[in-house]
Image (cartoon, rainbow, N blue to C red):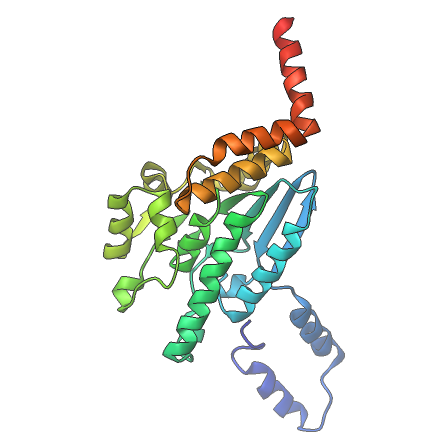
Amino acid sequence: MSPWPPSGAGVRAAGRRGAGAPPAEGCRQLIQRTVAVPITELEAADGVAWLRLNRPEALNALNRELTAALEQELERVATMDEVRVLVVAGRGRAFCAGNDIKEMQTVTGDEAAALARRQAALMHRFSTLPQVTVAAVDGWALGGGLMLAAAQDLRVASDRARFGLPEVTLGFNPGYGIARLFDVVAGGHARDLLLTGRTIHATEALRMGLVNRVVAPPTLEASVATFAAEIARSPRGGLAATKEIVAAIRAGARGREAEGYGDALRTSAEARERIREFASRRRR
């Protein structure tokens, strides 16, 4: 997180008070509140968890600290047996503006590569969660932010969302997520984003297949909440098994559908009960 205060105003204020003078009570409370603000927020209710990036002053840019916080939050989510859907969102006017440019200016090439590998593992971790993951995209989703959205199973965007991969215009390639991008959108569209570096509107992202739905900005959170609740009504076992099969197919495996189907009917009482309920409704 950026140091507070970023302009050095606090240093100048301390100088006016005198080098040895303690900070005023109001100033001390403000500092404490600022330091205590979490860089991520995680809350869960009724089978749905919301994970929010909380660096609005930096457009939720991914730095080492935010990367570490997201790693920790995903491990927490993985243990939440009652949660069937995870929604990923950003505070403020951006979903995520990509990797932190300020931090990029200070790292060596080796450090940059190590961080990119770590962030690639973070993006992959979403696919191995038992929960269905949904990106709620409002505002900017650039570079690593676009890749973060693409790492989710589903994506809902407001019509003020903007997507792009500007890395090529800066002289380098995206550090992670290219294979996943080709999985989400057709090859021609992926190459368009990668090689032009242009920024696209949410409606074009919808036409590409990069997002699944576009809604008005004021309704984004409510629309995603309704969407997530619909998904969460399905049994957790079926959702997790389907995600696992999709991941296996992406990795080159074939034929797991039959095994997963059989496993559910062998071990899931909830699946059996829902089959009975469905059959009963059809007989009426």
